[in-house]
Length: 144
Image 1 (cartoon, helix red, strand yellow):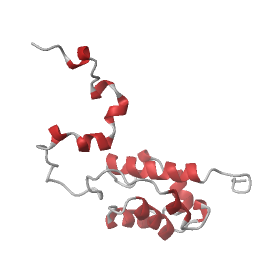
Image 2 (cartoon, one colour; image 1 turned 90 degrees about the vertical axis):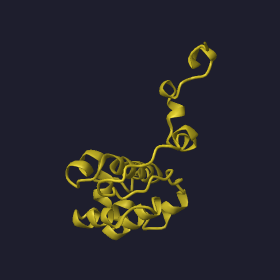
Image 3 (cartoon, one colour; image 1 turned 180 degrees about the vertical axis):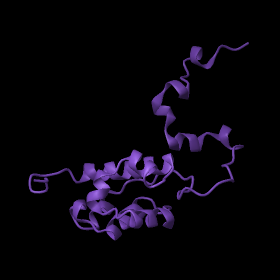
């Protein structure tokens, strides 16, 4: 009888947050037998690994995200995740999400008021946070 994996110096993914990353799940061959559910409406994203953030992509629109029009916001989202669906883009149009609104959005708002699923909202929040980090408010950009 073999000792548990933890006793052998091998950490369990459930106890090691670094091992719980999304890409590592894709590499786990023990999950090959699991197929995604085939019911319900698509959420707007395909089950792919996260798109690497290319900092150059953030510079293609107007410099200050708070000045973006709705279509600039949608262009940004499609650049961040090419798999984003037209239905998500249509939701942003329907709710008039321009640059200022984008910077104020959080996952609760997206879920409660826009009807997005949790996974979609979390991904979008990640992209928004990266945008905020790249465009740290300078004194001339601050709201007065």
